Image (cartoon, rainbow, N blue to C red; front, side, top):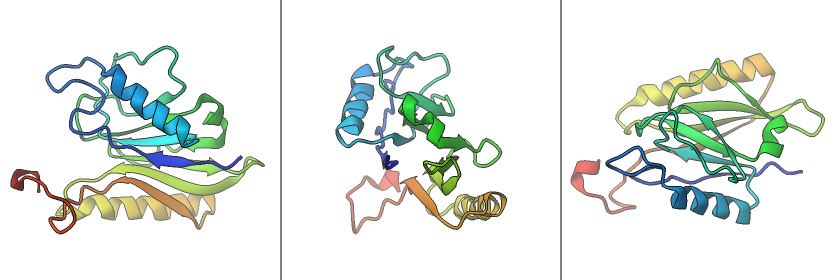
Length: 168
């Protein structure tokens, strides 16, 4: 089966209310329904803001992987439970803002590397330098030559989108 991946940014409040750590189940269900309609096996979630201890709906068709934190400075992923055997989380690489996985082919061997990310502002080039260094290390360790980098690059280009000045 084809391994389809998508990315949905939960927005400013993430998966919780802005002034609380209460999970917004309606937002989680919106993401899950959209992902199911698109036949996604994995959904990268930049800035999910999902604090440790917050419970997800028991009947949610996805499991959450990634850092649990009320902060925007993280990235997570919803993964279908039946897709878990097709991914190998690479805990030795990445950070709270970068999640690395190996996507396995049907025979169980590595097909490509996947990095879900939530970048710093564009002036922070260290994030991208670290990501590319990790990519080279993943390629070397697993004998890969292909990767998918998917997430929020945090580029607020005034020529493309209209933002408040305080956002850039």
